[in-house]
Image 1 (cartoon, rainbow, N blue to C red):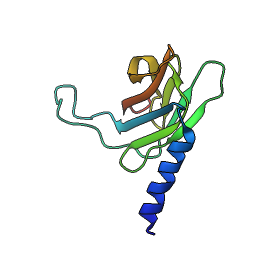
Image 2: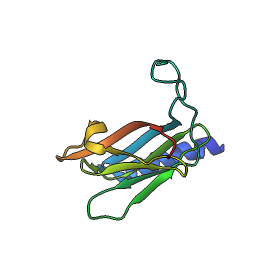
Image 3: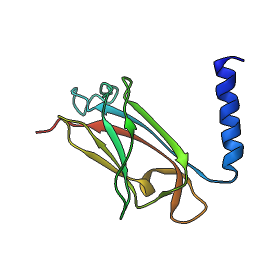
Image 4: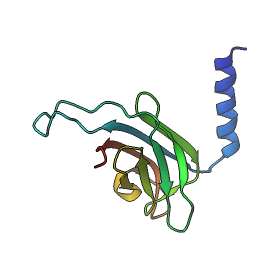
Amino acid sequence: MSARTRAALGAAFFLVGAGCDPLMGVRGVVRSASSCGASDATRYGDPVSDADVSMVCPGQPALLLGKTGADGRVRYANIGLWDNTCRIVVTKNGYETQTFLVGELCSAPGPYSPSCHFTAFVADLVPAK
């Protein structure tokens, strides 16, 4: 059995084992703010690697969701739901911190208000002054 087949079967057994537990996820892209100026709407900044992406919820310690890869992307998935009052915080040395409210970015609301299954963001980091 190939590694790919084993991985697919493992994922299927995990999902069956998880039963009806809700899944929560975050996808994001972190890039440097464009140096071309506001008039150049076609220019996107370069990907920012090794940026920390965390979830900060009231009354709980910050949860590191991951670090961005060379492509500036980060992905996170787990069992549960995000509270809409949680914040996604993107940090990287040399750049200003950027924060997003889950409730404002939620693209798949959860069954229990106020909750969220899935959030996606694009962070354009500005160099620190």
